[in-house]
Length: 193
Ligand code: HEC
Image (cartoon, rainbow, N blue to C red; front, side, top):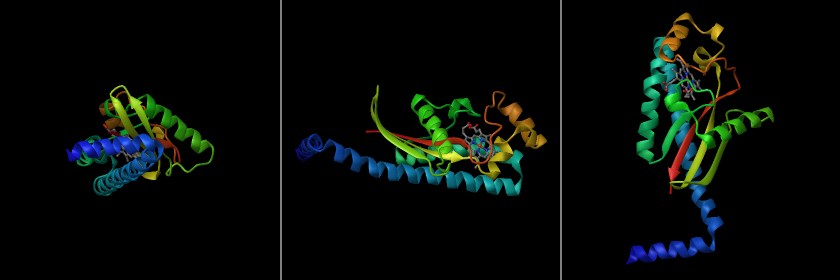
């Protein structure tokens, strides 16, 4: 009974003030998504730097290949949000291929950089209707910084070992030839209502 009333009340008020409700609702989701994206960036950077210092870039490739998907799927489980990393030129197409909405946002990030925005502060969110229902979507850019060049930079600057391992592990690798300040990809967060 109470639950039914509560649902009716919510429906009543949301019919009255749909925009305010959507905004307050999405502000909390934006905050949560931003926190999730930052957590991924920090955890990945932490593991990457540790492995780079300890064993060098060849072994650190395993961090990107095995630890990162584990980090993102753990966070997805904890938060109930689907969290992935995507890129217009993915290294791993099975995990990193963007859908149409993500492609549009990534292209927009590139445009915003050419207009003078900083690559590390780019984010975007939107509530959209998909065939399966209404979803909240959020993306935060992953800019190319110095350590990324070891594995995503100009191929003639990669170490012999990194180049060889990438060629065997990722024969269709598109994630090379990047420079500092470009967008390497983004953390993408999606939550159904
Ligand atoms: C030690 C090598 C290495 C370094 C350093 C590195 N990456 Fe990667 N990166 C990889 C590998 C390998 C993959 C593919 C992982 C997989 O199989 O899912 C990858 C995948 C990615 C992806 C997922 C999309 C795709 O292309 O498949 C993003 C985004 C990404 N890296 C961003 C970065 C950023 C930003 C930095 C710098 C902070 C960085 N990487 C540093 C090796 C590296």
